[in-house]
Length: 226
Image 1 (cartoon, helix red, strand yellow):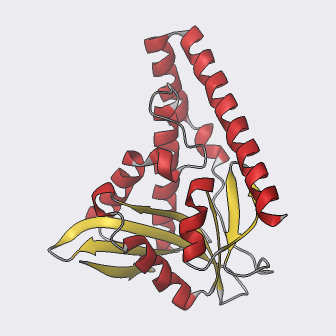
Image 2 (spheres, helix red, strand yellow):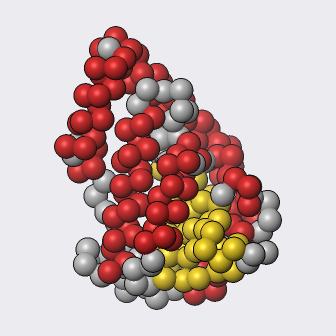
């Protein structure tokens, strides 16, 4: 059993830290890049995705000029244990609409209705929701009321309606994270540890992986919408 808590203001640090740990532990599942841990660039994407979620959690304070809401699932037997979270971005000028930015459930708590319950809670307030997900997750989100709308890079774009909102949704610029000092330092460390040849190979492997994912999504969406 589990309980849901909604935050529209900053949540306790213990909740923040558990959410960020969940992001790091489930990077392949959460990130649109979906790199495997075997890729040498994995640590860079761990940091960057974790920092992106950290910035969204900070935005709950209302200091970044974007609207953010957080839904947290905790274990009933241990209310301090976070087992799932969902970050959504309410759309300006459209009170019914939101975008789902991040959603994750702890591995040991999956297939117990946690994700569905969090999504139902959000859709009760924002019936017009949009998200992007891997091809493998389309069936699960279809069962929650979403439909395929198109392709967005390596992910399938889905919406609870057959049209997008006309309102504006505030999102963070993540490009700055990848050019930050911290990411450069991680890259330098990996370069020193593994060598230039290995890092170049990792980048080529990543690029092939992203190309494959993009083609896979396009084929899936074309077949689905045909």
